[in-house]
Image (cartoon, rainbow, N blue to C red; front, side, top):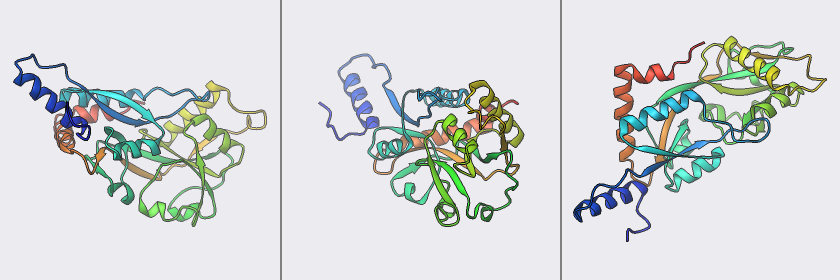
Length: 264
């Protein structure tokens, strides 16, 4: 019997060697746990993984000749479970605190963090100081680097959000916060603005008092947030090396940038 303390990578390799040593046929490839932060719809149901992320995950399955078992948790639990050795995480940005416990791949792509306001807001964004005194909606557990983290509840007040887009937009429209930070692969403010206003229209989630308001996305991105695979710093990091090789190969061939690019 394999020792329980073996990582899932080591346990699979041990099982394969034992089977081959016994003259048995190679077993089917074991699924590798891949932990993703969950998002939920306006009814609280788990929202599907974004199509572009599914394509990226499928690229790495092909490149690495493995199969991922997707496990979705709230973001703080993703970080804790990866730290404890449950599997790989995907969708993580770097902070100094996470770097103490997590090993990171090369950046796979960047998400853009946009500032979203009600359309009657009469200000724009040029620097972090423009958030002085404002209430800023940030999904619980999300971090945007040490410089921004150092200003939480100092320069600006954090309104901690659940990940449902509907509840976040309703809080913004009701005036419970001045601005929310919204991550998207979209690189143009107007594209995201149209998407969010279309969402409000399609889902019909505005109250009568909110119906006169629409969403405005400020023209300058708050930041570009690099996205990585991660694993426990205390575990086997060899798979990250293979992921890095697949990232470099995919960039050179153009296959990975083509998957990341969104058509609008």
